[in-house]
Length: 358
Image 1 (spheres, rainbow, N blue to C red):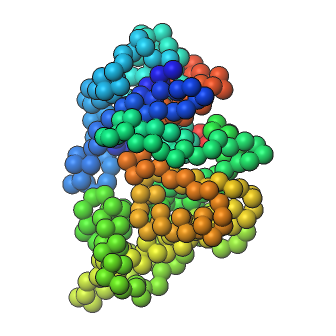
Image 2: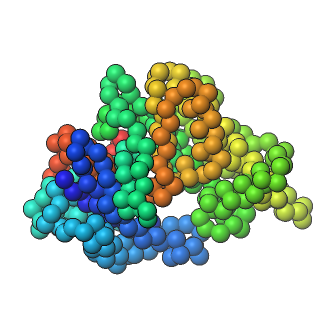
Image 3: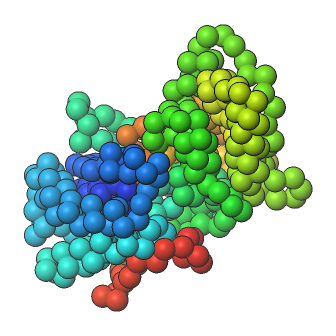
């Protein structure tokens, strides 16, 4: 069974082909991603109209390349999966409408995929045959209602702690009440004048700071909301950093970007670990999955790995190339939806945010 995945929810146009081999073992045959970073860099963030136009220009070429690299054709596909929610509405519509037309012309089922679920599905891929050389991965065990997995999805647009009872059934345990984790990183990076995207630049600076043997002395507020909740709030942390920088500049000074990056990274990682630790205690989950673009952050990955070791739970993180937005995760989630009979109607439409998020 071959499944084509299509992703266009934000600023990456992506297509990938996954083969569901014997026993449902997922083998990634191709994965193509066209990044729009250079287009949005001068604006310091994603401009929705520019993103939509770039998706329109790239999607046919990217899909063709994914099929070619997988050595297959549209006629050999068993299904086409496409991200339909959440995301930028204009960007989503490009992918959804293209996938609908392609599925109709090929006479194959169309599967609508939730972007948040798809991030977690990246951890179920067993073999990356698209890598050079091909790589055997460590796929997460499929959860069951009796043996659920705890999931953290952290990206530029989403921060959620979820309980996964199956690859298609989730319960939201905690989420951000305002900014997403990646959004906070990027906005602070922009204020410091770092290259876009700010999150990656902050990670590099923090890594250099820690490598020098220093420890940050700055004290920042936790992003873990106090009380009996697993929710986050990153807006207060972001505002605190921005005020600190502005006050210093008003006095003619300038912050040390490396120390600030290190302090911010430690604070966010500690906030996440506190919430995950509590969630593991409450749910009794023995498997922990962390996915999404922000899980590429080196300090956060290390902190979550240490938590899993202390708790004695099995941790699964996607390889770095599958942390950010990609279509391999979309194709993987489409497989599980297909197995449940979740076929999209011809009326499938893009849905930006809201109740559709899970």
